[in-house]
Length: 357
Image (cartoon, helix red, strand yellow):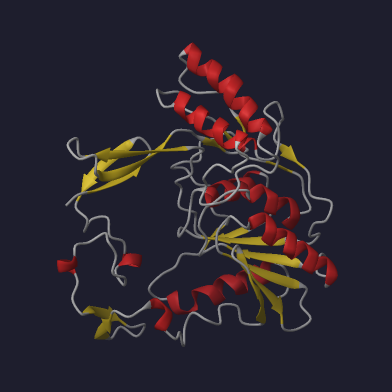
């Protein structure tokens, strides 16, 4: 049994054991054959005091687990106010004028959730509060610039993107034109890729991209990312929304996620929107993706699927983001010695930067 792991243009065929990450060891998945699993997961762990212990964890249904101890009170001094698909909102328990956004991912409901946040903030006199933006558990998605327009009082230049010209381009264009004509959103984890009705994007695909294909170019021109917020001839500079937070912000980053998180972070860093602490993001951003399946020639049954990167993300400062995530402002690594208090360490440092500690 083989699995494929892909990074950029390089495809590696490796055993399933090699692509199993530490995050997946605690779950039964289709990645490994049943023979790899026993009734329990046996582990040998080292405690914070250096003591070695053996533990045996049975496999149970995820919804039957009652979480206790570490991991729930992530932000001491703040109370959980709302849980949204895109983020959890924490409000201060005291008089501190700071809110915490524990960001899940740039979800399909990002626009809806951000609009809810702005209505809630306006109604509860929160727009002058500072923001701790915690993305240590975040994933990717789309439309991060929509969030930045409302979380920051500063104008900013968005990321740009392009397409690599290959034999898939005609079909790629046709798929998106068909989706546009049917008034359907292109697939991006169920989320919208554009704020407008997609006119800017379709215009670029059927003109500039088609011309680059006809010319035999290697890449298209660089345009504001997916034409989501600005037309193709724009300089990419986006102004804050009419209603936006007016305070300061600190972003807490980490390597758990990448893709659109890399793009969001590139906007934050290249535009110097706020201080950043933690660790760098995953570094696997691209602009567009193309999916293909390899099937058995006799039956047509799929064997494996590939996701190809077919475009570069260009940071506001002009560099290719994939494989080169933005540097962190203040490096605070997760280690064996600090993992139990890591969230508190990051929060304390963010509050110190904002002048409350």
